[in-house]
Image (cartoon, rainbow over all chains, first blue to last red; front, top):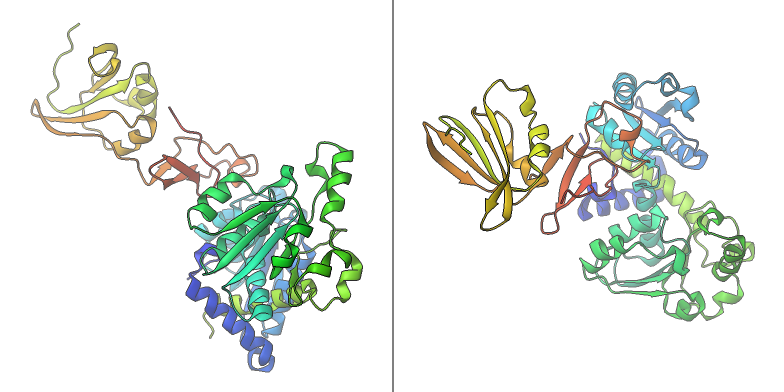
Length: 304
Length: 141
């Protein structure tokens, strides 16, 4: 029995296999419409995350399975003080697979230690969110046709953005990846990520505070939200925020086949006018998230 | 100062001066009935001063875990009054309930009965990370 707690739990071969399954699902959805008939997915969401929960539920329903669960801690036994270990042992009696979101880092890992069914980490605080990384990898694969030999720019909050850290970690196992880090000084990629991933694996990277300067060299632009609460002062936030808003004008020097990604939700960091640009892929990314989760469920349930 | 020699037991030598009580507590030596000598500030040609612990019993614990607390110590196993083994403890792959995770966002902060387990992720730099949240353990010196 396998769990998915951290994206590195999967080998490159397994990730490639999941992405291939996802692409086959996209091409032949009917083939998989009853693959999980009679199976149940429990969505244990200790904090609200409507998008991720609905993505998992939609994925299971599209596989012919059923879903049960809760969408916030107050409606679960956690509000009575039940431990994660006990909850998962109970849920193991009802469901065939679990997707867990928890505000505390490591909670899904604890669940996996006591579970008799596969556990998928659907986000544990600011720590891991491996199905977002699978989603991002599938999007890159579909848009670029490959998972190697490209320059990807990460823009915005690179300090606290877990999706950025996980994607960098996942991409570090592929060849020919060139990384450009675009952020204000205050939100630079943490030095331990640079040391333990980029430097340790000899991944070429550059750091800049100027998005426009690097725009022409990017094959992929991964935007993230710059959050107001990260800044010391309102003035500083307002000054920096505007330098990381992607507009139609800023895209003038970008490549014609640029892929613009964003894990969503977006606030104002991508102008709505950009949505009509064929290079904007963030809503396709959401769609890909469902397919990536379908493929993952199939793999963990070993129904293929 | 005279301390009787051991017949069967353990001598933990080359402890950094002043740290013997930490090891005493870690090994729960207060729970033993046997003779135990804690010798502090012993003159040492290599270390200037050192501590030594002599335990007149064979303990059923993984003494390698001491490597996390003080990697310079020497462990001598004594049988029938003779030293049968002398070694430096290696850094253990995992340490359990020796240090607590300080990350306020870690699951261990709300689930009191979870063991605090850290995994060795960088032997050279002696870095341990929490198995749940991957936060770095605060190193003992």
